[in-house]
Image (cartoon, rainbow, N blue to C red):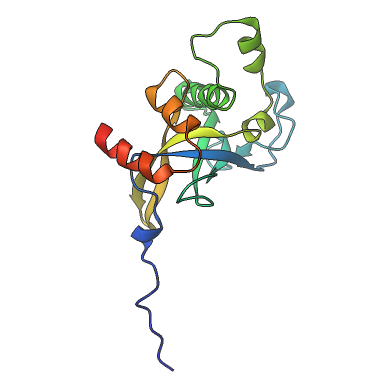
Length: 178
């Protein structure tokens, strides 16, 4: 029996366009590596057995608009024996996520802001944040990737977080920004 494959989507049609701003929520894939000395006792951390690197494996799920339900993955570094920079970048990313979810200005050093930044890993899963999406290609083809977390001090944050559903207009706007 013949199959008509003309209506099957190509990989490119499944991608969120590069430089699109989308509202997302995070789901952390359990890695089951606990290290009480670092405060990792909740099973969220993944450890690579070959390198020893520890990280959070995060799925970013689009919550609104044309791409609602689509997702992409990002690894947030927590420890690397090769370089403390990897963990530093990971901590910066986690801080940006918390500030995006809880609408905290990065420059806010109030008691309330500082208390909100004192987190458990599951706090990353408790709200909606704004992300900028890119496209990368590897041996398996093209896929979406996290370009950046947008925090309340950025112009795009108020534009997109205040918008309700019409992400398509926002993508056109993103194209104008370059």
